[in-house]
Length: 233
Ligand SMILES: [Zn+2]
Image 1 (cartoon, rainbow, N blue to C red):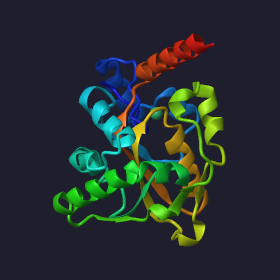
Image 2 (image 1 turned 135 degrees about the vertical axis):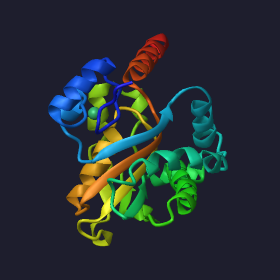
Image 3 (image 1 turned 90 degrees about the horizontal axis):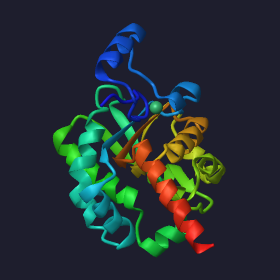
């Protein structure tokens, strides 16, 4: 599968054309969105597509309060973070995408922070020279937002406006941040977090998520969601 160099979106292009275009451009290919509106993060990596067992595991982690599942998923997340090793700084500040405080109290934890902890402990063994320091307080969620899944694509961006705030006093200007989230759906959350962090002085933002929804899958969910809503009215 050919993927966007920045966000990892699957591109509808065969390998031969991709190789040709890639060698002409001297760099990887970009999806339409990254080309037209480049995100403020350097690159987003994911461990796997959001489906099958992984989807089940994430569901247990998020909705069944089985926080221990995060530990089992640490290896998977660590593997994708490891693919950033050659490009990212030797010292990275790890920030989990925050939950709104009331939501976190309800769940008892932030699943992305648990995933980050699990992955960091694996990386201490597999990449001991790499300094990954968690500092989740760099980012806070100041507004609760509807689940991104429940919104149409054009409303996702508006949904996140003003949802995150960076703790600028705690940021060393020019530092590099590794942002961790459970699922990369359309990238709207990663884009907004990266924008806020960069504006507060962060030099570069890297994004690692456990799972990634590919666009056709997102479109399917949107359709089933619409049908479900219509069913109620
Ligand atoms: Zn892209």
